[in-house]
Length: 182
Image 1 (cartoon, rainbow, N blue to C red):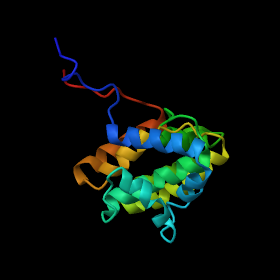
Image 2 (image 1 turned 30 degrees about the horizontal axis):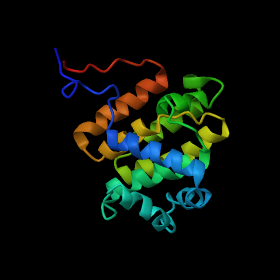
Image 3 (image 1 turned 180 degrees about the horizontal axis):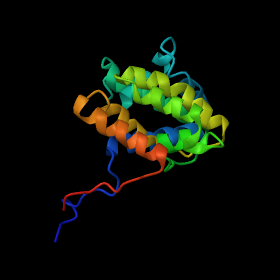
């Protein structure tokens, strides 16, 4: 029998990412000044306004592959005014934005563009208008913690393919259960 300490966590993403998302959601609900600053976190000219929050989470501000994903997710959370982290994966959210779902040529084009990304900064840049589209369609229940964790690992070539495959699977609606070694 596994002890409580050795048991696998229920979620498969980074607890630091989940803690960050929960913190930003909570702070945005109570501090409009912080929310306003975080809304600008994904703009290179104004992202420095979010650095106090990022540094508070011991995020290396000099490392773009770490800083940019945290800033992008914080900015999106600040814009959508959510009460809790959602459960919808990015691929599924893209499909839900269109009447034809994953059969829509526009949706497929947006997914293909996201899957063509080769760097963390490029993926974050492509996600920014997708976040706006998702918000405009009223689909703000994204799993931001999972997406943040995906973006943090996106710079590692061996993980990038798995992340892209998961995004594509969620788009086409053919989710698979991740196996956890016991």
